[in-house]
Length: 208
Ligand SMILES: C[S@@+](CC[C@H](N)C(=O)[O-])C[C@H]1O[C@@H](n2cnc3c(N)ncnc32)[C@H](O)[C@@H]1O
Image (tube, rainbow, N blue to C red; front, top):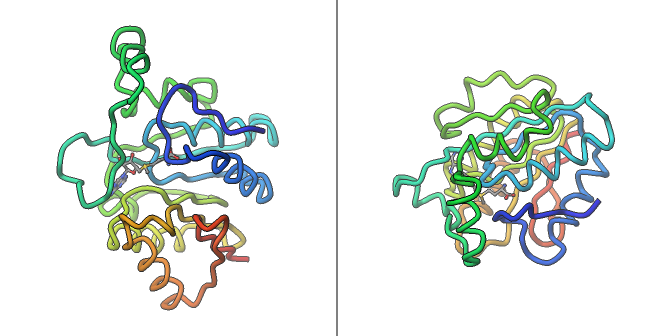
């Protein structure tokens, strides 16, 4: 399966990185996937397509995002929400009449999998510990990029994930967000769990 962009923005935009990401998911073959940091929902849709291909209707996807346009989260290194391509701006403003960075628009993109998905709007620093997330076997951490947020996302993920599951952290090598790398190193040392760096970009914790 090839990673598709669905006319939206995604952090897995560089040539081939989306395909490499899907290959990791394919190898692990999860049935219950949690993504922290949904953004326009492009990765969500790709992951749902892959799980549908592998498990039919027997899968679930949960996504969490702040969906917040204010300046309150500038420490989190949130990607730019504007399109460089004016056709995309036109398409969302006048045809879809949607903000692609919103729970409603992501729900729309995932409408094919309505029964299998759950989207949650909120800051993981505030809500993660309250959410009931049973039987999750793969967590993709790609939300806030501040040290404190990534550390919390890792700690909470470690508590809820099925102990044979996988936690994959994006942006190990992102120079604008060194807190990501620091949080991964500290979490690994404090919890005594190993990780490997995959395609120079992802930190993968295999818990089994
Ligand atoms: C890099 S983008 C995610 C990209 C997406 N995973 C993809 O593959 O296209 C990071 C997302 O994390 C969200 N975010 C930032 N801080 C957050 C927080 N504290 N809690 C939840 N989501 C957060 C942002 O709103 C943004 O949509």
